[in-house]
Image 1: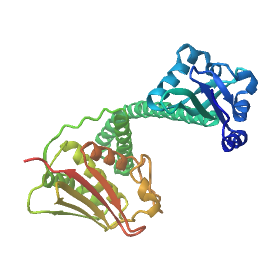
Image 2: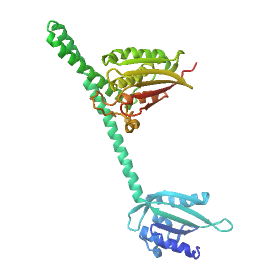
Image 3: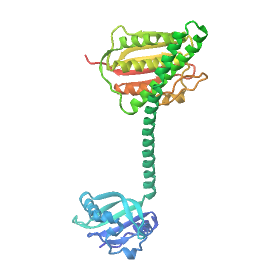
Image 4: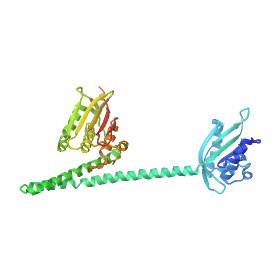
Amino acid sequence: MIGDIPQHLQLFADQAKDIAIVFLDAAGDIEWFSHGAERLFGYAADEMLGQPIARLFTPEDVANGLPDLERAIAVHDGTSEDDRWMQRKDGSRLWASGAVVALRDEQRQVVGYGKMLRDRTEVREQVETLRNLLASAEAANQRKDVFLSTLSHELRNPLAPLLNATHLVRLTSAATPQLEQPLRIIERQIDVLRRLIDDLLEVSRISTGKIAIKTQRVSLHELLDEVARSMALAVERKRQHLELLLTTQAIFVEGDRSRLVQVFVNLVTNASKFTPDGGTIWLKAATEGDEGVVRVEDTGMGIAPEMLPRIFDLFTQVQSSESHEGLGIGLAVVKDLVTRHGGTVQVESQGPGKGSEFTVRLPLARE
């Protein structure tokens, strides 16, 4: 039996309104029920003395033997911590967090148990609310992926007929110079739509895990030369200069050649888009340790400090005084593809008007 409890413990038990303290005998029957326990469970101490602790457990937990298991763990480990639903006198439930301690005499024999717990129903409800919000967000994200995939495919279907129609009009109206300018406008806008739809398709593939990386030994010099040649016309239209700065020694990385070309075309396209006419873009390649490092540097509009942490997020667009085409997808695709190659991508900028530098690091190919 539990004897007289110390005065300080009695004061603590009386004044800790939100903490329930219960002492049990070796069989698990209640020998002492604090005021906090009375407030928490709605029972008077006289009602609970001599009663099994199982009266405070839910019927399903009693059926599963949890009151006995809780004490058995306390005997084995010294303490049994638990978070579970428990039941008040009126049948309502509370989420209780606490512990049971096995009490031993001088011969190390178990003479009883001390149980202390607190009502954490509000915290539990907050957790459940957050879980529900997370589940709703995940469901909404899945619906977004399905919508983007469907939209991009549906938008792509009319492009080929439109482009074919412009070709037919051009062939049948060669003697009508007045149509040349409208036809160029139509073709240019069709090309813009095609690129936007391709970006949406790429996001759909990434979100659904449909991008496959087929690695091989890739020469960075040859790859960047291909990128420079493919971007030459777009850069020349803006009277920009694209310069390749490569090491004399060849650099090989492990990667999917077509996907790496996509990475650096996206970075050069981004640099060209935000660099004024007459500006310069550099493609630099070198090795640092066991990595191949490619830097895309420009003399463009730069990036504000508050935008740097979000620049690779999907649909993030840098605001500027000029109107720029795009959905803010290209850099998100870059980050995903580089990560899939086991590499990293970073951005640096000294601020608006001071240009920017994107650095891609990829593992070197094994000999």
